[in-house]
Length: 251
Ligand code: ADE
Image 1 (cartoon, rainbow, N blue to C red):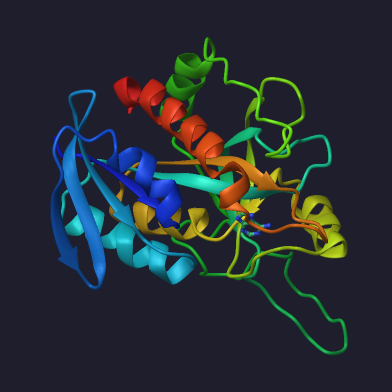
Image 2: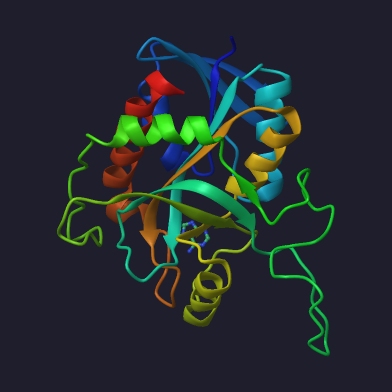
C-alpha cells in the first residue's frame, strides 16, 4: 500500500519526473508542492524539497506521515569524490553519512571519528545503510540498463556512464574545493557528495520506511565545480528518469 515518494532538490531535477505523470494533482503543504499521479501505472507523489538537510527532512516526513508513502527515493545530482568517476556516472547509495556531523576542537582533540556523534541517528552507527533486499532488487533491475554517453559539452567522459553502488555523503555545503574533496574521499571512502540523501534516510529509518538515493554526477566537487544546468540539465535529467522508470517495478 501507499505511493512511492520521490524527492528532488532542484526544479530542473523534478521537471522530468513531473512530465511523466499521467495526471498531476497538486497539494501545497509547508511551502512545498506535492504532485500526485502515476508513472507507468505506479502511484507516486513527487515533491520539490529544495536544497539541504532540513528541507529533505521536512519533505520526507510529510511524504510518509501525510501522503503515506511506502518507500522514498531521492533523485538528482551530486559531486563526485572518487577521482576514478566521471561527470554523468550514476551512484546509488549503499550507505549514507552526514559528513558535516561530528566534533571539532581548537586544540585538535578528536574523540570521535568524522561524521559521528553518539545518539546522532536512531541506530547510533556511523551513517545509515540502505535496505539490503531493496538494493539487491535495484542491482538486478539495473544490470541490463545502458545509459547514453553524456555529450562533450556536458562534460561527459565519451563513454556510457557507469552505474555504481557506493557510499554517498550528505552535508549542508556545496563542495567546490580540491582539499575538501580529497579529505572527504579519504576519510569516508565515499564516491559522491550531495546535500539531502542522509537526512531523508534518517527520517525513513525513524518511520521504518525503505529508501533509495540515486545521484548522477554533475561535477567532481573540486575547484571548478558548479551546477550548470543550462549546459547539461536535459541529459542528466534523462538519465535520472531512465533509472527511476527502470526501478519502478521493483520499488
Ligand atoms: N550536488 C551537486 N554537486 C554537488 C557538490 N559539489 N557538493 C554538494 N552537493 C552537490
